[in-house]
Structure formats: C-alpha cells, structure tokens
Length: 213
Image (cartoon, rainbow, N blue to C red):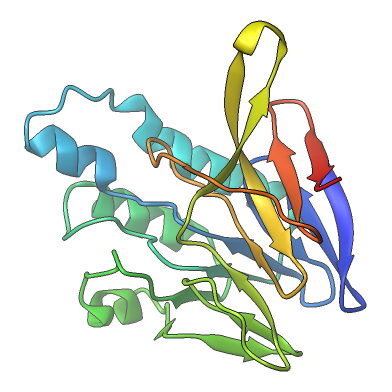
C-alpha cells in the first residue's frame, strides 16, 4: 500500500493511490485529479458512470485520514474543464478539509483563479521548496529536484504467452519524479525505462519498484 523512499536526504512515502507524502514538510502531494472530467464528457453524450465522481473525493478523504498532513499541494489539472456540477462537490470537500491547500496550475486548470481564492486556495505556476521544484510539467532544472505530474506515467509489463499489462506508476529519473494521475478515467502514457530510472508500479495491494537492468 505504501513504500518509503529517500530523495536528496528527504523522506517521502509513495501511496498506491498515486499520492506522495513528504514527511519533512508534512505535505500531501497529488497530481492530475481531473475533477469535472466525467461530468464534462457526460454532458457531451458519453455514457460514463457517475460513481467515480464520488470515488475521487473518497480517495482524498482516506489519504487525509491516513497521513494527517499539515498541508496539501495539487500538482496541476485539479479540475479538468470549465465549471460544472462537480465544482459544487469540490467546494463541499474543501469546506470540510480544513487544511492549507496550494494548487500548482496545470494546462487543464482553466477555472478562474478567483474561484479558488474564494476557497482560500492560492494558485501558483510553480513552487520552490527546500531544493525541490514543484510543478505540473516535468522538467530538469539545474540545482533543483523536480516533482511533477502531467504525463500520467505507466509501465507495460510483459508476461508469458505474449500477455501485456499496463499499470500506472511513479516514474523516477536521477533529477525528477513524476506522479501518476490520481483521478478516475484519466488514462496513462507508457514510459520507457532507461539506465538510472525507476518505476514504482501501482497495484491494488502494493507498490513494486522496477529498474533498468
């Protein structure tokens, strides 16, 4: 369910929901929740179930209960589209989650920043903290270790009989770690491991570290 790692002398906890907990900062980091996506596609005729809408908030509540963080940072694409019925659910979640929250803006975060400010959620383009760059878009910047999202990383595992399984993962290279998408119906992008990379593959029961041999 969890796996502890160390990055630049800082302790982090990977959770199989796709969230990352930074022990020293007592901060929960979550990327690519894409709230509003299901309602957006349902509005345009896609027959998607509504249950995953509520599952996103349930998962967030369980993480807050599990880690008891002092603050939360969303690493972009918190809300997928323009405002729809899921914004009300998000407002309700925020009102019962009495923690400092920061949103690092992503490409899908098109809701007016004033709406977040009304919920006491500052929106920033990036956040520099203790030698780490918190951003939505993966990048390598000299002197900083990047924590990001955006790509929705996954790894394709090959089994016997030409069977393949694609699973979401945390994807770590020497200078950055990319978080998996947290939200339901977000899709994934298959990554290729190179020397020095590690994929922390998410299953329902555990997290499995896979490195380039």
